[in-house]
Image 1 (cartoon, rainbow, N blue to C red):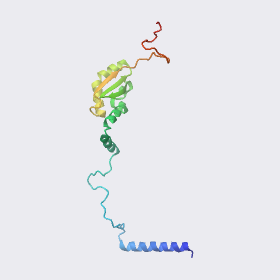
Image 2: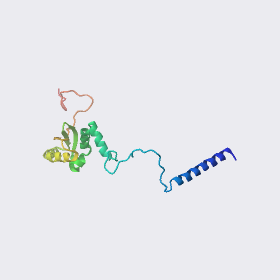
Image 3: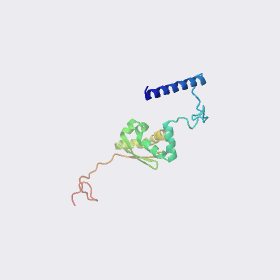
Image 4: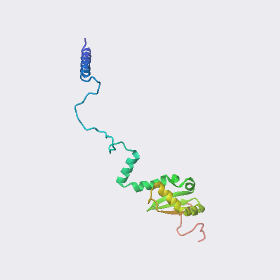
Length: 166
């Protein structure tokens, strides 16, 4: 016999001996006791801080701890604009900026700007329902932007459009 065959035979004999000893000591087939009596690492029947948490709840706690809640609420106004105010209004109104509780919105036409001013209370209520109270306190509505008459790389300040008579 070669040395490798002898090693394999010795290993198999040791495994067989360990298996019969374990069966003799553990007739019901339970897992062997490791000898350490550590406290369990999982929670009991009641709620515990070690229980699995929803990812959104964890992110909400982190944002509150670090003071990001206000910025996230501002971003939510812009990100969920269509869902908050509705598809028809979102088609004709675009939020531009939110500063100090005042949301600036640009309408697609002067008629829509007037309509948004009339619906201001309802819009503020929808926004408060969608992202929370106090995020948007006032609504400032602008009409459409006027076209620019400024063409070319050179411009003389103080002169209006088509002012060529000097």
